[in-house]
Length: 132
Figure 1 (cartoon, rainbow, N blue to C red):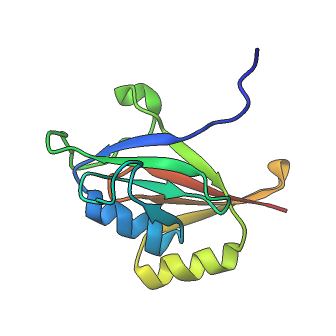
Figure 2 (cartoon, rainbow, N blue to C red):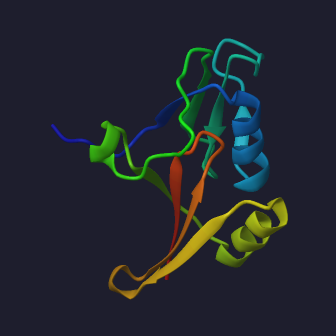
């Protein structure tokens, strides 16, 4: 018995339309309706380059959204971030810049990676990692 890989992240959001635009237009991922529907008004599946649905967005009206996103799982018992392995770092930097989305970049030679950190419309921190 063993865990083989992370399958997906589920994000409950009061910002579904903005989240779809972010994952589709800013991160360049494919967005499709959830199974058994053609409707993107209640949820969406965000697919990676291998056409795997790795982010599930679910619209909810009753979320409490604070003024500042929290960094640090211990502060509110939430996940700090999730990471996506990517290629085309310079293209991502150009796309983020063109979209007016704030990000920070970091070089981590110990991991042989360059990282970009960006927040989605829900305040969730996403690590885009680029191995070299």
